[in-house]
Amino acid sequence: SPGHIQAVLAAYPELGNVGAKVATQFGALEHTMKPSETSMHFISDVIGETAQLVDSGYFHVGGDEVATQQWSRSTVARDFMASHRLRRVEGIAGVMMQNAINAVKHLGRRAVVWDEAMHNGVPLPPGTVVMLWRPEMGVNNLAKAAQQGHAVVMCPQDRSYLDQFQSPHGDHDAFGAIGGFLNTRKVYELDFNGHGAKVLGGQGQLWSEYISGGVRELDYKAWPRGAALAEATWSGRHRPGFGDFQRRLELLQPELRRMQVNFRDADGQQALSTAKAIEVHRERHIGLQVRRNKARPVRHTRHGDTQALLAHVRRVASTNAADASKRHGAVALLQRLLKGGAPKGLKARR
Image (cartoon, rainbow, N blue to C red):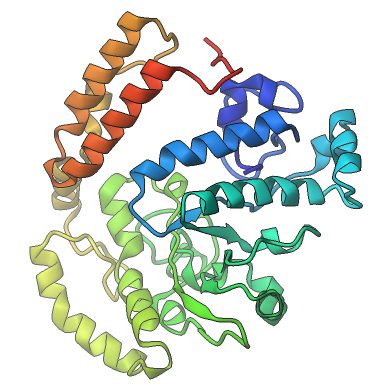
């Protein structure tokens, strides 16, 4: 909010600045929400609904990579800027983020944002947590967070984005990647010096759009880098050192194989044979039966269609008994949405 939102705008075109279609690519796209009270009410409604599925004191509302081109060409955006006394077009994102953060605070939770939300000219409400992902901002980001009294989470792209290659140029990687180079040592050396800002912890990111090989590729990208991130985050300045970490990791590798985790070994190979990795992938990938059943997207909201959708959700979700509480919550939410329809004044495109 209000960027990274093209799927919403394709379904609810009245919330956009210009017509938006369902995206056929991923990344930071040009489409943003129209700056209006209707848009902000929609975001508040979505937060209120989805928060019921998240059992946490925190709730992430985004705020990263918000394009401004459409707002710069929009008379509606100019009127919005005038009514909120904004000097910069980036301030539109600031006002909309304030609205989202206040919706989270109304639920008794603490809002989390990406670090761009500190730089749009509109102050973040007190208590907001900032996730620092842009390494090029360096200490300046930490200084700004400290000055404004915001706690931070360390998740810089050059140390915690696990969708990057694990060898230079990917020469010794079993799968593709977004690019870059992030080996286990670099993850382990993640810096938690807040330079005056309160550091709550760290986070690793593994974006699924760069995973085409299913669970076996996810395992390969996540481990052992995820273990390095965990030790760095828990131990901070008291971590025993990368050499000691490697020694202990080597002792754990037989157990990881027994658990059928397809981690990346020291030579860059998959821990499991290709045939075994594919077998594990098939066993663990719960959503495959949707593909096998060739389920089609639901495009209508008549009563019979929605009841069929609800039955299908129950049937698919029931395969994951370990997440029973979340499954029941999702089904209950869907039932409420089907009963109440879209938020007031909005109608999904058919």
